Image 1 (tube, rainbow, N blue to C red):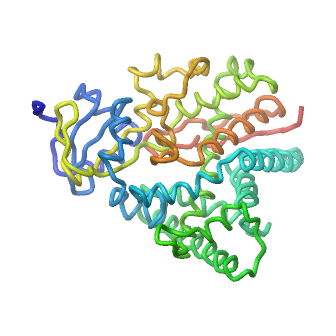
Image 2: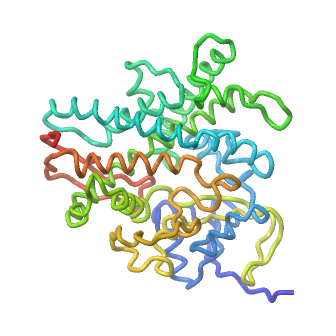
Length: 418
């Protein structure tokens, strides 16, 4: 039997406020202090284990060791995730539901999304050229909303685009907030779920015509392991699991614009015909800038890892941001260096801004290809197809605020097509 070691432990009754104060760096700060990739603390009134790094990611995405049921707090479920969605499932039920998402990620479907994103960029540019200035974050939310709704088969009237896009944003902007902001996120989820639930009823009653290859159609008619249609409430949650993360890519678009502005030497390396350069730049944006801070699971059954005992039911958090900045993985991790991805082989446990492991059997984001495609298209427009002036503004971003977004939401003036 392996010799047990005492896990480094953060003393105190509750560290939730410390996590809020330190944000993205909470886990990595303590990992450095303890000189350990794993430590114990208390969060939300219970014992919790925090981990960071490649080996920790491999462990965290071992389905024999961890489950997702009961890992997300009610606060997160009522804003960001919803209740009963694929993120909360395990085992065969998870694999079956995840396959519903993965079938959408085929070459034809992804090509359609790329085409729609380019069309929306072209339309947006026509409008931007007539304005003195724009706020990029505010403009790309509706851009992405129009594109993803067309792709997902979700009917969307022009006069509701802004509201629906803002509701999607409220769901990912408010999970760790309190008071009015938290209520804003909860209301946005309730309104959005009702919207999609009504559409599901219309699809099932043949009251609206929807592309049979679309997410709305496929999810509306998806059957569970018992050959029963999913509850409309669950379908609504899962359709929003397509829409909401797509709108969240607007955060990355802001960071793309910021990185182009702050690293002009890297911008010069980008050309419209160099797909590899675009890809390296996008991957470095995903690694370097904050997005999701961490993810949670619970120990499935007692086990020992590296001499540390993990007890059944224990809440366990994997540090995404810290792993993406781990100096044991990335040389000079606090430098923005796209060329680090020149010969990268795609290790699923080192670059984990949207989760790690296998897309089909694990809890890695099914829409990761959509994310990178949107980012590359947006990067190409911002770097190669537009000229614009960046006025004086507050371009700082906080590693305490979750999610982190440049303060000014990136203001652009005098936008012209090249």
